[in-house]
Length: 329
Ligand code: NAD
Image (cartoon, rainbow, N blue to C red):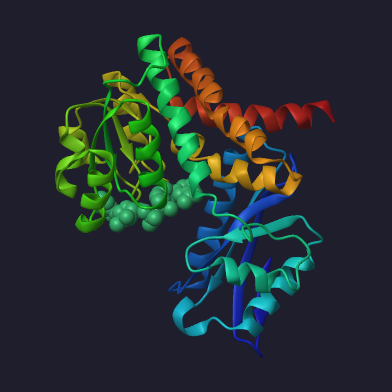
């Protein structure tokens, strides 16, 4: 849906990719796109990604995303956000908005004054995203070594922001040996002091010889350059779009590096939001987040049996769940 409101200056796109499994959950992104086409393309691409993420995580949610064309620092106003909320409300609950780049919890509260269903207005989902990545790492170690024991495992964490720092604490608790970095070096040193971790410069993290490389910063962590120096048995982290291009995933598979597809490993946040909407308590939510490890175990088993990269298998599993519902119609 293309949204335009002259009075508030709102120009936005709401993309619903698929609602077979349930209402489409996805963030509201606010970015000063150069063209409307660019905004539409981004909304469609991101909405599709949410369909796959929700499906693979076993959630009864579909995929959607919306983008507001504008500079969040300059163009955002209560009137604009309320107008966005009214457009969302016209969809009758088929799209549930959440936080994304350029929007905050407070913005979602304003949108929620007009739209009946909004997410991301409660607790920060980052600790559950970290728990999900932890589950992915434990499952990967179990897949390679036959035991989930992290004691003595060397794990390199790229980026110790909301998710990376919480993940690092869980890994140290299990006896892993950590090497960490962040472009905010003061933060990296503070986390390292707290946890007894080693610190390296941001450029050096990907070449650290380790059992697990955990990208928890930005996208494209696995690219032509990093592949030349990567010295890890497992790649599992929180970042979105870890693979710069699909061929990099094929290369990891060829080398025998076990990759946890990004949208599977970082699904803890969306699982948390789904559980919150169902009114479930913290222990139930945590148990549900930990099932990310079981999902990945299935992905890797099929990846081995079918000799396909795990991210290809993950996509197929997400599609199969949706197709099974259509074929039962
Ligand atoms: P954040 O901004 O809190 O942390 C990211 C950290 O990475 C920051 O401390 C930043 O300084 C650091 N960083 C940036 N570039 C770097 C580089 N080149 N080398 C080393 N460090 C670098 O973000 P977050 O909420 O912790 O999320 C981390 C990643 O996980 C992001 O890619 C995000 O999209 C993804 N993710 C987060 C969630 C969530 O619940 N927060 C959910 C799904 C995916």
